[in-house]
Image 1 (cartoon, rainbow, N blue to C red):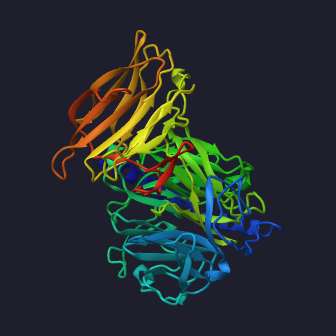
Image 2 (image 1 turned 30 degrees about the vertical axis):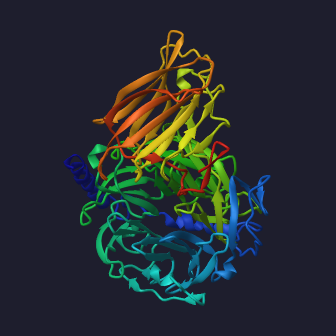
Image 3 (image 1 turned 120 degrees about the vertical axis):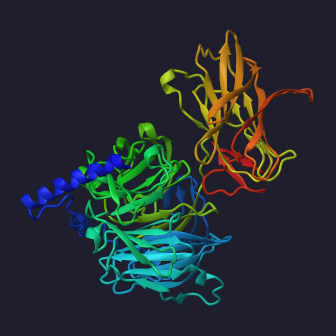
Length: 627
């Protein structure tokens, strides 16, 4: 990686010159005091921003109907359960994380005076198991992450708190809750810290905003969780407020496989290569127009885009909650492509991406769920919300602090400063169709409406047929996400109606089946040849899509099509046979066009948070599909 090491040397020389010329200056002066001052100013506003405890009791789970779930404004998000702060240890709420232990699920809720542990295996009847008290004193800031069945807890402005390590397996089989716990280990190489970031693939924690390492990335080896060891420091850009550190698998080939931190550094998005813990290297430091306090961000699952929230721009610039989208195809020169503006006023806070959705905890606006429709255009679409602070929507520090959307049950947990723990379940549609051809002027196709059903004739658990009717006026491209399969067959059926659309010379993609790494494995396109329509099938082979065959479809009449995939012999074989089948309505015979090609072993994917299985159900564009 010599192409950026010289940049770093040159930068260090400039820094030395600047330090000699201005002894009190630095490359990047921490301005956390501005963030704290803004919070304190907001707290002083009468009637709002007081962060007082608000008593609330939920009698039973409540569906979101007519725009409300009990007293809370909502859309597509049901309220399963609530635990008020005075029932989970008191104080005010802050950070939250989750832990899955076999089939059991737990919420780990940060509070000003400690960390609460809640068994939410039955999400409608959560049980408070106990509390891990703060080490020295209470603080508004506490942060929790999990690695190898251990929770790691830090706190800001909390004296010599250090990092608590707690063995989560102690939560199993508690007969008489709640208990008061002690930490299993305490890492004391720093006192206060604002946040902790963990790369679970490598076993390294990155403590940020601490009273060491200039507030930058204080790197800790936690591969032996109860014996953490300091491993390095990155302080070239001063204070880091939050970060995400990953084993990078994004589009920038120069850094694939390396450990990269995407840091939110108050006035910049700063990208650091931390593969060598003893010598981290800053790849780029990226300021942007409109920044006030670069707070936190999260990568899309393909590591191609970084979605960022700025915590003070709403207060200082007077606009509604704003979400920024960065193109990360070049880590040395990333590019801000645009921003999404919420229809409501609030301060945006922590957000986490699961599937095609980003789940945001936006203080007084509560939980906001945005579908990432077209990141290249910063096109995000609100898919649902749950307002935990119905008193008002304002740019003040009350309401939802953080959210955790990674529980396999599909439940999402929210920590609310004033009201405590909310357990909700979004009712989101899987992304079947996205408007991918606006620039081509093709406006005579539609989003799918009705006529959607699923069955599994002769197939195993993970195989089922998906039938889709397409008969409207908008341009569409169907994307069905696929995951590695244990079963040996897959079929996806489409009821296609061409509707006499004049396509000219443009071949329109109707369906694309993709692997977990977003690699296209099967593509279905529609083509017009004179007055006739043909559906073409291609599959991945040797890194490229290779044509398999095509079949003619009627201009006016709906025709059932089915893509079949069968795994080759051998438990670990990746090659299989793909077939495009045009089914006959009146006869058992059918036209088959097939070819053997190398593709990923796949099964039809389900929406984020859903595990599928016989008896499960989920939603696709407002039509319920049952297995």
